[in-house]
Amino acid sequence: MSVISNLGIQLQSLMLLRSNKQDLANLNEQLATGKRSQDLTDYTATEVKNIINLRGVVIKSTSYISAINAVQPRVKVYDSSLTGLEDVAAQAQRLIADSSTMTTGQQQYIANKLNEYFDSTGFYLNQKVGDRYIFAGDGSRLGTRPVGNLSALPTPPVETSPYTVASPVLPSYDVAAPGNSADAWTKAHTHIDEGYDLTYGITSSQTPFQQLIMGLRLMKTATQDATQAAYTGHMQEAYSLLSNAVEGMRDMHATIASADSTLTERSKSLKSQIDALTNQADDIQRADPAEVATRITFYQTQLSASYSATSSLAQMSLLNYL
Image (cartoon, rainbow, N blue to C red; front, side, top):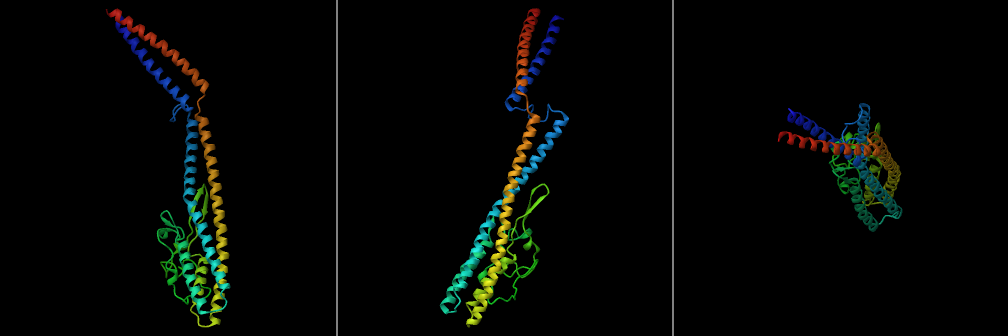
């Protein structure tokens, strides 16, 4: 009976040893991580609810930052493309101002320069960032180059003044023209915070681009004119369209600059919010180092005593058996 009793006490002691070792391991982990638990144990129901809510907001804020990071490269390309397009219009205006008198040599020179302007305009409006043509619009158009061969457009233009179309009609230079497409007029937008939807996109169908391209086409028409009067008339009309195009593109440029600033500031705000929420969650989960150290000392002492007691019991059991 004595052997059986001692065996039962030994088993209880071993179970206590395992329990104390696990508690000591948990305390050492708390001391290392600074948290009471790596999962949601050791917290009250209220604390668990608060932690889950805080984590949810952090996840959502992180997704908004990801959206901003995806959009900002497109905004940067819009900015550089508009700078290039404004420069094309300005160069064309200077060429008109310097070419008031029609001569065969002058007309040929203008025609050669226009090929450069058409190529540059098409290049900027067909910019691609990642897998999307950023000037194409939305929906099914994202993967389609929006602007065709501008040099191949008919001169003189078949369109009549004021030469512009409105949604959903496609301008003549669109690769899908003639026809209609609401997507070609839909500007890209994205959610950058709770309840905050930012429209940042620019489409190749917008009026300033129509005016720019038509201005260049009228200049090309002037290179084919036979009289000074016709030449002057087309050049003056082209200059007016180019002036309107520049003004409109500058407005777009201001909108893009504002969008870029908004994205940057919102990203900073979200990162600050994430830091604050993470700190709040950490405060709930934080373990008191002094308390943890005291409990570790207690368990170490208890374990040492348990080892000694277990060892003594084992020796007693062996002697009783013998």
